[in-house]
Image 1: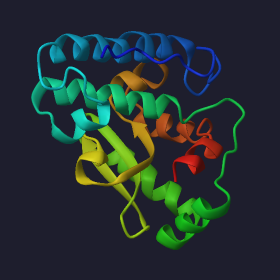
Image 2: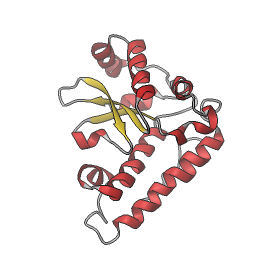
Image 3: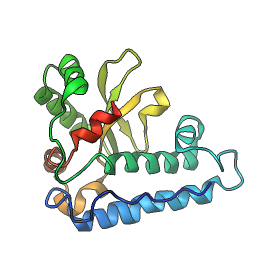
Image 4: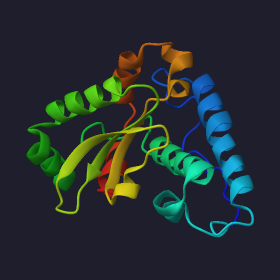
Length: 191
């Protein structure tokens, strides 16, 4: 199997001014694409040559895991955005957020804090546990909640390449802007 960079469901400038076209050119076009190319090189001749990204995340180690998880993480991240989507959850997901965090605003505050306080590079995740409850977790580097048996619902990439061109070292400003492009119709379907 040859992994491919998925085509974004929006134009490179569609998320401006929250995430600029230049950031997407580098983040999606260079970083995400490099993970795809690295993974294709690394899996050749291994037991993961024909594996799914999910199997790679659950079972691989080292470079194969890191690149496979980053391909999956970035695709999941980029495909949770739109320029005109719903900006708050409805239905079952809204109820689960209220039950787990008290309110949507309290959830946003806790999620934003998890993204802002993650030391170094990595990801903040909203996940669904086996019992149906929701939780917010931090994962460093290529960390992915699938590895722990959790169902990812939403993620925020806090590697510097996700925001440095638009926000320099102002991670909290990037996180505030993140909420303006999250498409809760897409996120609700993941729940």
